[in-house]
Image 1 (tube, helix red, strand yellow):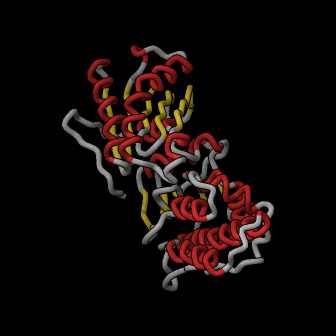
Image 2 (cartoon, rainbow, N blue to C red):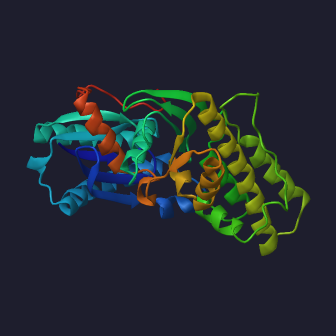
Image 3 (cartoon, rainbow, N blue to C red):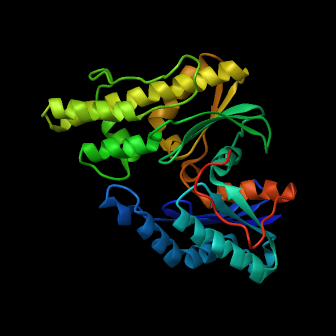
Length: 332
């Protein structure tokens, strides 16, 4: 089955052609990073307008790259939520129109389930059951994944998502949006032990996260220490990243113990942080736990993961009608 995947939940316009849920024939992403950089974060109104400008071109490019004509598409899968409503509406409405014009079925995909499915695009997908971390600019969730359609939410952020914390700290340091790549690059030249930022683990046994405290701690440190030399910024970045890393790893290993799992999948934009993934693999390996990380092109928002999840939904008979709508808040 050949599925056209469409992803427009935030600030990336993406389309992909996926065969049988696992073979990616094409995956095209049009980034809006440059447009939002000056504002220090994503501006929803600008994002939705740029999606409108890009959606037809991106879908056309994905189909051309895959060498697949409209008549060969068996179904369309589009992100339905959670995300920015204006952005979601562009991709979901386009998918409705494509589905109607091509006379093919359509399904709406939960964006977070899509990220979990990016782990199935790994060279060595995790076997069931496994623990999955979905960590990005908008979400930081831990799931116990028991099958292709059973996802138990074990924990989530109570305030800032981890990617959001990276973006805000990057802005404090004067480097703007997006913060993840900048912080990781700066941290490589710093000493993570030089500045001991707090690790917030919440109540004993909790799988929830809170990153607002460490963000505030960085702000206080900057207010109390006027040194803005390059060396100082490197140490701040390294200390911040180490604190976030320790919390994420601690919660993931705790979840593995709780569910007696020996496999962990790291998905979302934070999965592109090589420093974090190496540290997790090292710590997990000491307990015989294997870490699975998608290729970088599938870590951020992309339509390949949406096409993969959509294929499984088609197999389960989960389809949409033209009256279905998008949603902004998480439903799993």
